[in-house]
Image (cartoon, rainbow, N blue to C red):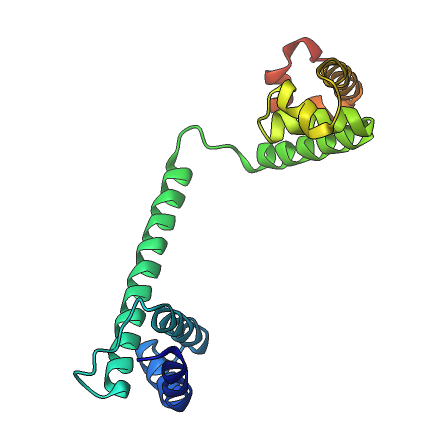
Length: 186
């Protein structure tokens, strides 16, 4: 069947297809829309092919039913995996306490603020190396500077960032911060 003919058939049966998708998805309109979208993509990309053994509508409804069933199974498996991961996190003996989690978020905010205060070249060098996992030579190429210049920006950036973080009093106000930095206990 030609693509134009497929499109015409899909358009002709769209209303009834959506109604069938709603039935297959237990009247969840959002899920039915997703299923119908996936079906249309399958049909138009040739992943689901109409052989002519039945009417187009019968075949299309079978594809919708199968797609809805597959999607329901994937969603169920995904929720089981998420529940298991959540149970492991709750039952884990080394689970971080909520106050320490909040502190970790504050530390990340302080770090990001300090990073923004660096010169643009220093910040760029550090971000390329640490966040994007490039080596200094690759970072130099991305920055459009010589290797020596990139090394200088990288080293000066690390030094200045370390100084700014050491000056920050907020880093050591929790039990977690004191454990990580015992020399700073007051």
